[in-house]
Length: 183
Image (cartoon, rainbow, N blue to C red):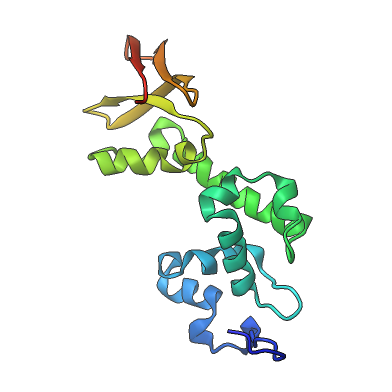
């Protein structure tokens, strides 16, 4: 906390002990051992005058409401954030896009779906960034653990309508229709 008239001290990353530096911790313990702020800090790489990169990453996450908010934000919004700029913004947007592509990888690269939690993990990032309700239908193949999904109609604030239909190669034709209205 900043005292009146005294600036808050933020040590530079190189002033931290090796055991507290994000890159070194990632190297020794794996990226899973890092907080979201520390992971983002490794992508952003440098802080801004008087503020280390971990604090910058924490402010960025707070301003945009976490990773989902960063994913939804456009380039100009992140670029305008104090301490960012075009290069850092491009790095962050590229990392988020890689994460999105991982979730939508080709069937042979997709993770296996064995539980509802697996389905949620597959769709959470992509669907969490939607501005309006959308329904997805997943087709699961028991033997291959493959997943294909199609989506169609979105909703409005006063009512939601779910309908659609499509064909998933190799699985035959699927039709889905329905209507859901919020009270």
